[in-house]
Amino acid sequence: MRIAIIGCGVAGSVLAAVLDGRPGVEVVCFEKARPSEHAEAGTGLNVGLNAIQALRLAHPELARTVRAASYDWMRWRVELTNGALVFDFVMTELADELGIRIRWSELYRVLRESIPARAPGLATRRGKDRTAQTAGRPRAAACAGRVKCL
Image (cartoon, rainbow, N blue to C red; front, side, top):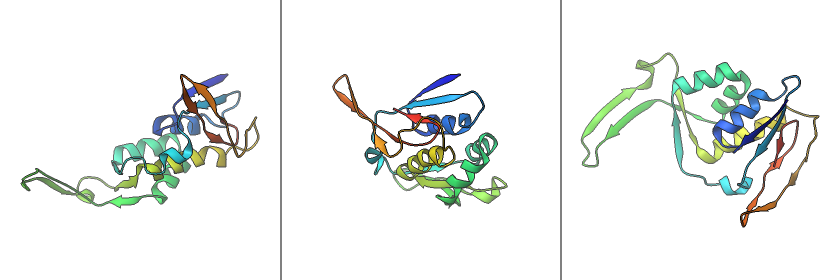
């Protein structure tokens, strides 16, 4: 079965990692952004415990890799623009485990690198950028391993 994943952001990368290595499944990812375009994508991201638990259920190795590249989310504090406190939670008082804090660019890097690192062997374009023109915009992605990135 051939599966195309359009967009290799967070969801596309996790889906590719989950599908990678399944017997009879070939995954092709289409991503318009070059890896260097995510070097400073956004700022930080807080990822709650439920999302970490869902990732661990779907792909335990990837969850460990993401957590290792992250900081613990210790406290959740929200204030209004005038400084009035809305809430201030110590995360260990809310859950058995902490969520994470990570830069978007680091999350993209970890997710995308995890796919080829575990998947040697199927048709690859190891170490090359594939660029084509689509509606005047370049499309590119670097890839290696079993999951093809176009």
